[in-house]
Amino acid sequence: MSLPQPSLSNDLRLGIFLILGLLMAATRSHHFAVVPDASWAVFFVAGFYFSAAGAEKTATPGGLSGRAASLLAFALLMALAVLTDFFVIRSQGIDFWSHYCVSPAYWFLVPSYAALWFGGAWLRARSRGLRVRDLGLLAASAVVAASACYLVSNGSFYWISASVPARSFGGWIENLGDWYLPFVQTTLMYIGIAAALHVATVVAAKALVGAAASRAVR
Image 1 (cartoon, one colour):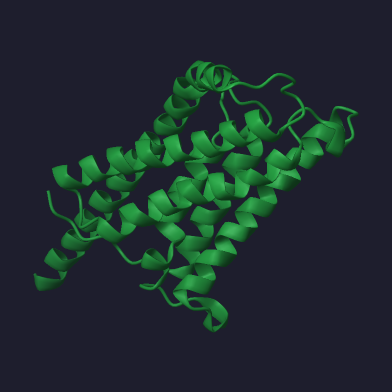
Image 2 (spheres, rainbow, N blue to C red):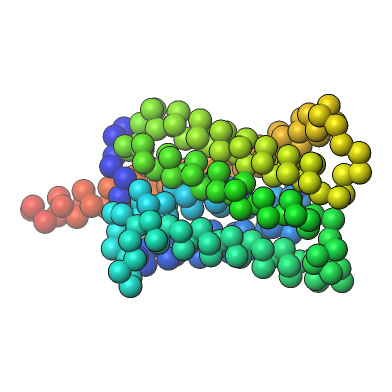
């Protein structure tokens, strides 16, 4: 099936952004709860919809260019992630800067999430519709982006954080293996759900447009 990627109105883009932000804020408190953390998938999906490749097809309010709008969207989601962490940690009665997860390595979340964002942007720039090729590109970009995010976030925490008292290359490799699949599987699950919703929406929109065109001809 070959369907062109639809252009998104500003209202629709805002709606998608709000849904992604709410999803991240609602799930970020626990990595592997009943409803696991969707943060990684949120940045990948946001990269697909709000990258310069996607934004350049849509007029943005205030005269923002596609690249400027993309940077703003990334910055807002990044700020939301930090604010969510701050309020979750403070709600536990713990000082934010004293928490186990907060160290100089914490700020490596920026390049970690940027890897996910660029994965979605890379997919957007190369996606031509709903074809087998696009499914392969989705799988490849999601796995590579999630793996890069994991490598940067896990590696920075292991080698920089004071929470790891004794470091060794062998210990890092073991730690990488312990957590790689849970993090990547969760991310791929959410991305798969987002892709299914995207396909269903595109197909439904095409069907509605076709039905309206048929009525107009009669």
